[in-house]
Length: 309
Image 1 (tube, one colour):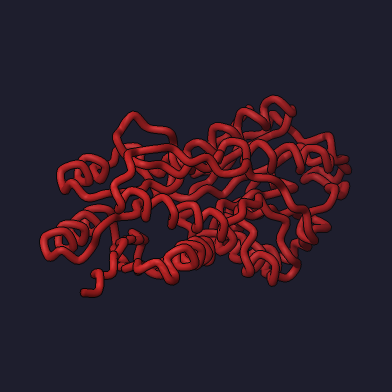
Image 2 (tube, helix red, strand yellow; image 1 turned 45 degrees about the vertical axis):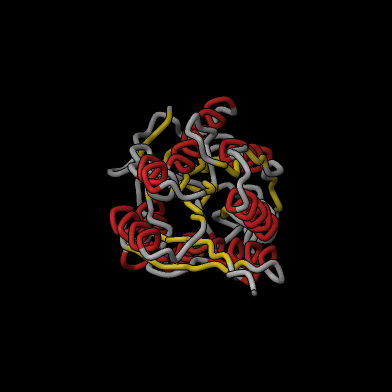
């Protein structure tokens, strides 16, 4: 008698304008599927508008015996999903951390180091005014990046601010327009994903701001989208496909009865491409010229921004 194929479930909770699979998650899924190939396991993917809907999908899956394990992503600051997984009693893997006391297998990514590396790379180029466009700031990995970004900017005497996006191209475009039309225009922006960076490039082009001559851009994740952008994007790089293979092995292990464990992935690094350069001297609003190390740290930041002085 042929053994029943095992199924791992993944729900992606995304806002309406991002109700689909962004490039990062597509690469993760490809890595998971590579591990599953020929090993009697398949990946079931559904999309939901929020985590409440995600939990309802989990309950339906478990009630009908559709899945043998669940992959959970994007842990929130206040998150009912961990308790729900324990209540359902289904084997599970959390992608992205942070390290938890909860009895769940966790695949950890050092988000803080990625943010620190981005600031160091830009500061080493001479940038003294850097903005960050984050993902939804109720997600713990976004908060970890925020904190590390602000702290490293302070250490390097760099003016810093954070504006929140939602991982969509539109939110990256909107945030960049806000940054580039404010009273204090940054010389570099770090985006939390490639789609928001693509939106940022479009906004800069629309406003006549040349990348990288007038604005340097770094995006999170080394995806095909980042490599094919115009100009090709400098990135905080993690082996995303390799991350997916780690998740695939981890969910297979817990389905087969392995206890909770923590998997650490290699630290993120920076790969500089054509979207970053040293900052050019430029005229301020009074007509004088400022060099790369002369950002006016006394000027306030615009509405909706978190500033760091």
